[in-house]
Image (tube, rainbow over all chains, first blue to last red; front, top):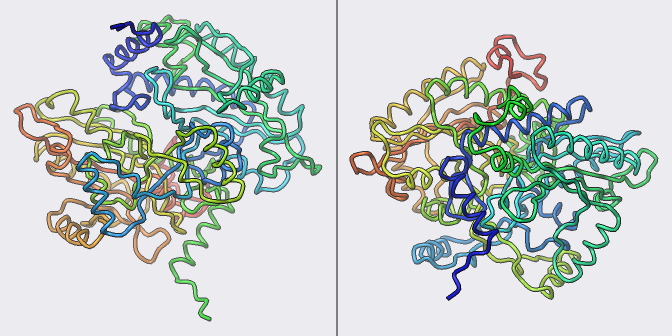
Length: 312
Length: 312
């Protein structure tokens, strides 16, 4: 019998055990779903505040969106073509009392009770920027120069249970979106890729900016991923966390006219808007900091602590 | 043809229109699912900070939990007996490429695509305190005197689409939980009912504390609700928002041994723990403030603004 555990899995299990032992993460019994302890939250919100301090001079609008969105938004965004396996649709019970009795008996027996549920009109939000597109489209054409939104730290969901503490089913994406013409959005993306490199260097993380692709579903997905890379549509900042390969902690995405066209976002001259977004994975950045600098923040170097300033 | 709109509905539609016009709420196309503008968020987080300032001297633990929980936690908590119609179970796609093709064609035709999805092991969290019970049970018996958790502002989900802006499908519950013996938890609940009355008076809201019951499902639900009232298990603070009847903005719940027994939470002497929780509905309190004091915070009286202090 071969009982060898793959090295990545062993590393991830060990790191997860450490995180749980020192109360940074709280096990729920479900992989990729954890509570977060006080010190972990101090780090996560300090990283969030550091990003806010860098974003604030740009004077973005700062709307906030909840973790569920209309099903129609997911459909229009094209998510079901690219990532059907990662979606989270919300089902509920709309039956009569007799069905509720059977549902409850199934729960008691440990049987499946999904057949008693039906689809609602909402889904979990898989990408923090999605609710922003229909909201902006409803306002009418963009002003000259376009707009910038800082959506704060939004919960997003991905159906990918994993033993890697850096791959959560639900996590905080610190998200910003730029909408305008091609130059507007590409210049803004360049600016933030440069800012991000500075942020991670200051935090003492061994970060690499690289062209990247999304995990598109199915055989056709490989072609989509190749095309995305060839056009430099996605960049990621990658750092070592708990795998032999680096883990993405931030991404910078140029959508061309995809969302402008899908949701009817117009420029002031009537043309279709271009969009770009960026997301910082706040839990992953926090995990990278604990991994690199140690599990107790009071042992971190003054250089790193100074960056997180009064927030830590 | 009778085109009379019920007075509650008209009031709710008018208030919702006002809230959207002045950018406090951002329509999503789905009732009960809204983005929130900057000024609304300033009020919501100021109320949260006010509650934190009152809670802090009690030195609670401050863990944070995400908006999804294991399906098994919902089952053990007994939610499916009491509120199956309000639950939100997360379904996803685990099929092959051919099924994904059919799913996508259904989306394009505007047809239902739910038959291609299957139940995952996670559900939306309907009550901010739920993830705390298994987490505490895993630690072993409570220390003498029990424990106090301040869970911060947690997103919770209820499947109840409504035209009332004060009835959201997803909202922030500012939640605390006390676990210990009967006296521990009842004294703590008394303390907070008194604190809450003071908070709402200071905020200039016409608040009423009253015994209450949950909207239990089905015919048996009426008996459960009567029993809950007869035993004074639930109190609510109610204020006028956008209905002829007052709307609950905070609740104070004594669970007796329900969760202690369901999740195996033990006292230091081996007995089953009692629990109580309280929740402040942050969006509802914010809406009540806008309704009472006006849609622009800079017109609010200095008495109210002073309460929200530096946070506003």
